[in-house]
Amino acid sequence: MLIAGNWKMYKGPEETAHFCRQLREHPRPTEVDIVVCPPYVSLATAVQVLAGTDVAVAAQNVHWESEGPFTGEVPAPMLRELGVYGAIVGHSERRQHFGETDEGVSRRTRAALAAGLSVIACVGETEAEREAGEAENVLRRQVSVLERDENLVVAYEPVWAIGTGKTATPELAQEAHAFVKSLLDVPVLYGGSVKPDNAPELLAQPDVDGALVGGASLEVDSFLAICRAAIHS
Ligand code: PEP
Image (cartoon, rainbow, N blue to C red; front, side, top):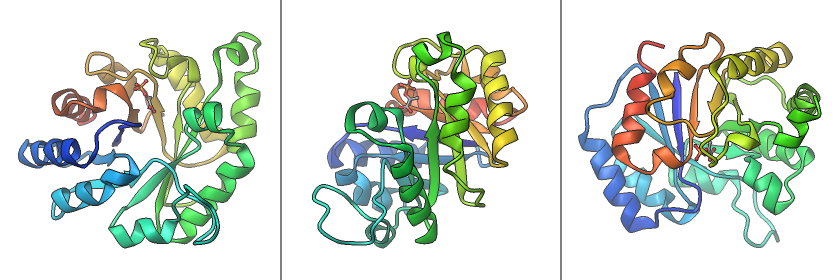
């Protein structure tokens, strides 16, 4: 089981240091892989404060080139230099607001894996796509640009469930995860309004291998409650 906290555009270095100090001091389930994904400017702080613990630090994106004239982007070797373990790629907010394409997701993922980073590649349909009966086609298209790798996990994040408080039912999540796994044999995390109260049932589904958590990862107590829910799942 892997529980990753996507902090989105929250927590500068000071708040990151505070959160990570708290996380370091709280008892954590050793059988669960825990990852925090702060904004770029807070990565170094998170790596420093969590050094020597079992909590890994990942970025929220990564570029496909290793350096060059790409203003505003950050490449995998620089993340590696910081001590960062991995990166999220293709989050729906990147696809929705920043024109991220399947082709870009593919290039970012391949480059990150080649540089030795682990990758959490996000896929998921919008509400309109699900209502139109297109959910499986969308997932098939998004997953088709990825290749199996031992350092790759997929996060199934239905766009209609992200930051909305609407969670997929455990049955719907299970069905989508099984479908994704039929396309690509990698662990699949669920993401979309995961909270301490719905985590146990979601994580208990046989093909749910963990969670990518947004809002509920911003407080140590709720984040750790979700990590604990993963212990016996
Ligand atoms: C996310 O940011 O990946 C996410 C799933 O957000 P939330 O848990 O807030 O829906």
